[in-house]
Image 1 (cartoon, rainbow, N blue to C red):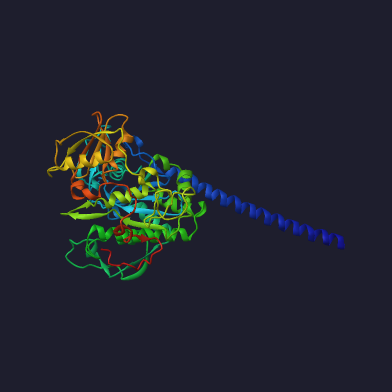
Image 2: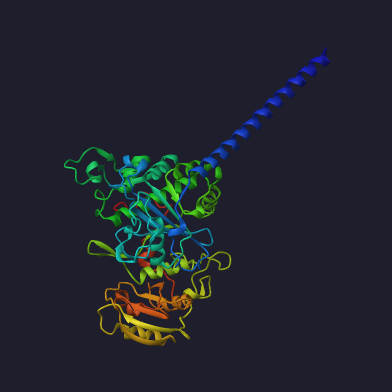
Length: 494
């Protein structure tokens, strides 16, 4: 009898253990299935734009880091119609920044480009397959609207950024209002801080009355529509400028990154966030699958919050528009090419260590070595109305060993940025030539040889022309914001 009780007890324990094991196995299967289902759903919801519109004349891939262009679209199409997007059905770029992830994967910097910045927009592909003629001295956000489609033209914006910076863009991501709203909700809200109460008229200055309270003064967490209101406010805070709004957007993105990283970067924690974002996100084909998107996100897990910086491209007002300041901007782009941080540290990975910037540190030789023009023939043209500018540039070139085949006045004399054009097979020599002129652009042309068309940037800063240093100007570095900064700091936002 006792033996039968023991057998029954043993059988009960075995049964309970079996049930426990089965429950654990079932839970594991459900967990894996849930992640798998999320993975499959994520793969199915990723929209990509065609790479056919990306220019064939691209900067060389010299940096060991990665450059990711992030574009915010304010189209009213689809789910954006009720979220306060732009007017009409044409996709427009509301904000944009170039994220450089350094080769050591411990540092990153996001460089904002104001939407009203005057730039040159290179040839871009239209919906009918034709290519536009290059546009000179045009506002930056016009590139996204080329073709006037609801989804915008991210390839054209990418072409423009590559032409502007001389950096090769590895990936481009477009997030519209619906995607932004969903992401902030999925993360459970983003901590922000406001210097004053915000009312409806602050969002819409055309209102005749103040309206109701939208956001209260002080620290708070925002998501969804409230988060959109926070990043879109322009007239109710600071000087009412787009530059001020950019500062607030940088503070918001920094706070968002901090919130996401606090959850821990793993496929399990990232899938819900990625699912929320990708429903209204468009990416280049290189990020067009779940494994690639998650792999890129996971590559950021070791980037320290304090080493995640936000800056705005060096700028000044030019009437109602924004002009890029040289040679400061050129020095910023050069530092990113060389994987140097804003404070001059080498972030090129194991090969370079972590010491201060030196010519023998980790920077690429092309970024720091003296410019030698031996064996390079160049024709120089004055693209401005400043008398003698071509002769001055020719003297500079000769002092570095270049052979100047002649000087002349350019066909057009409203050239803003110095341009170096080159014929087939001369790209490397053109890049060497461009290093003597801070902020100079290079582009291939049908004409043989190399031509330098000096612009007003050289006329304004001839003494600063030789680009032999990758040091970021202190005015840029000192304005940088870190992702771990207090959201209540620098509340004026312009």
